[in-house]
Image (cartoon, rainbow, N blue to C red; front, side, top):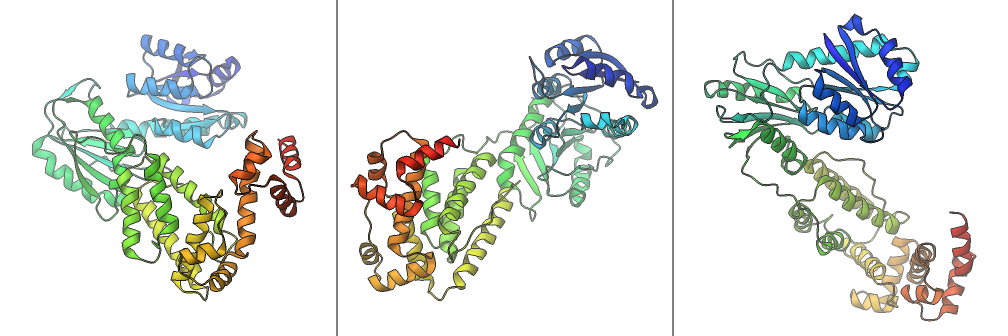
Length: 468
């Protein structure tokens, strides 16, 4: 009999689920209820529970916090998430923490009770059949020389792990997380296990086989946590579909950066905008090396890429130099580099559609970035053309053709755009803002601003803040 605990801060929901669902038909029994995560943990200490249904949004201790604690204390406990709204981020976090399923409460309103329980029961039976032996978390491993882990970079699909590989009674295997599973076998069975796991790689999308050494005299909790940490950090960079077996040691330390330095991020941004990396392998490899050397965590890397794309599209989206398509998510550095290659190809294609040489296109891009990065400086077409070693008339012609505006028009446009940000997001005076965007004369700045926007700076600030 599967013993069930229901955790929800709404008493009516708890009673409704407890009384309305056909538990007996699926060999289940509700043995308790709790109104928050803290009370649920107290209950778990006193009675055996096989399945816990928990809400995510609760006072005292949220469902996510409860899951983290319960998974650590009771690793064999099955957890199903109850959610009022099908919030993708919360659901993904819950599944990452080991939830076997989730139930949107609207499903219960539609009286799909039997379907819901059938799905959960099937999932539990499938997991139970895969776990033949699971050591205690604090038990120390003395007998197994290596641990093998299949890890998928695909976080969205449901994986069916190739569990029935050997029949040795001392083999250990269980799910670490939804996207990773680990095995250990006695020395005499290791070669067979390794070969079978390697042969099964094609069954799981975007999969890597980790051969983990230096696992002896470690607790199984330490081994499991090491795999989870490695998966979330180093494997992001190590994954390669052309090299799916990776030997790693528990003595290895995490090589990802804790906090990137501003100057390192600025160097990458400058390389993206100011070096011809899209057309020359040496510059491309230099850019890639700069990215990899920072070893940014996935979230940090995504933030950097988004900032680069937003800046690029703000500057070039309406020009012949082209817009870069935005990205959604990457699960590995391999995917990031594939995207960078595609981006380079799209930029080259846009460049090829113009009649100008690549040197001229790069010069115009460089001129744009020089002006963008120092708006207080009063750059002129004459001064920049001399700096770039191009005749003034030819530079002006190329700039207008590629950017869609004359140099003076573009210079005024970006200064006014920056001043809009200052007007809406600071309380600084109009004179202060005028100086920051390259105008020493406040009245002249106000006249230029009104010519481009139809409003004086003070009117724009008042109107913009009034709409917030």
